[in-house]
Length: 248
Image (spheres, rainbow, N blue to C red):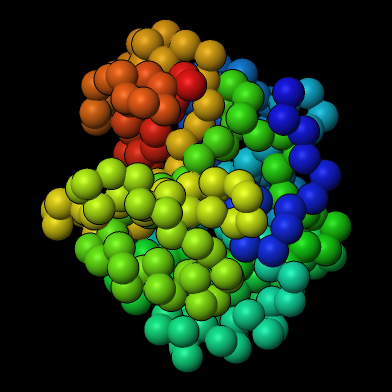
């Protein structure tokens, strides 16, 4: 069981789902991933998925300014000093998409785009450091950047966050290393899909989860296949948000 009580600078620490109907999302992901949910309040519509009492990821109604866009999972990266890091985004080749914002006492965030257009959220922890549990069924386990220019994107993240790119294959995929740990990867996209961060969730049985997804109203986007990291499939929930599942 991979329990976490903190994240070092530059490491992925949280994911959440921007969706149209949060009750419908709970009805889909609850049985799919074996999670329960906190109850939103009138003042705060944000909902957190739980494994027991451990916070593992979040979901929220899609903001009004994103109305009409497909629903999506978004990725967070922990940083030690949000002001200093956000101030360097432009000089490193990225684009700030808004000011640094306080999220009550939970932390501070900045939304940024890398040079290829993939969006990620920088997070300075307050009371919320990130997922309490990873690499277990229904929790995040890997993050992959699908991009039009691996070198440009990795140049940005290396300058901003200190990442190291390690070649994985002859097709241009690289592993992302922080210190001695691999935390994700970046791979060339095929041009049909805009650059984005894909979220991978660990599951105990990839094929069973694919069947469950379809039974719950979701779809299989990429059928289950065996790759060196494990058996994996790309799925879409019943509102269209896409994600990967993998059984290592």
